[in-house]
Length: 283
Image (cartoon, rainbow, N blue to C red; front, side, top):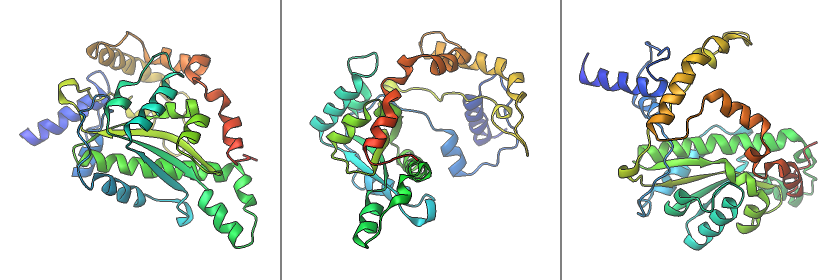
């Protein structure tokens, strides 16, 4: 096995762990290797983003597929440290911590917005009523488009040597975040993304995923298939947490807690009310 092949094999082992089935027929390209190398980064240097990095990320985001070419998303780049700290303090109150260090450290917070504001304004200026935006699918479509755009931006950032971590907890304080960044009606911050130069002295590892039969179905959904593969993933999951000095926990307990604990919601139990107040009727 060549050095290059050994490197790729090691990457796959990190992604799936030693105790799971590892696909042996991956078609390697530079893009695939980059995607399989992804890891969330929560330790950053204070350096600013390289000149042109943000514009490159947005160009990549705009190159993602979007529904009917309607461009129903926006991104708010929070670079002002006092404003970013205000958002951090606001969100930190919704989780069991008094601060979010990686949000404070990173130079930029990107807030990805499901944005029907432009469409509503254009429609009203042309004498119409944007009543279609009252329906659930319009909100979902804009949220999906924001997600696709953000993932492209994440890949672009990582190709530049930057690190990112998505922040779903922005929805914990959705009303407050919208007010802080002056979002108009028919727009909603779906999630955040912290981006910056990783601190290699405090780096994390690639987090393993379940082996493919857990998520890959052929032709029809197999309701029982995942059960044959959970045990393997539990070992990999626990090994990762142990290596990262994290509290011991098995994956199924994480799933259970996410489905039964209101603490996990962190304020998102009020999300419908907030979203509707922002002009999305969700009919």
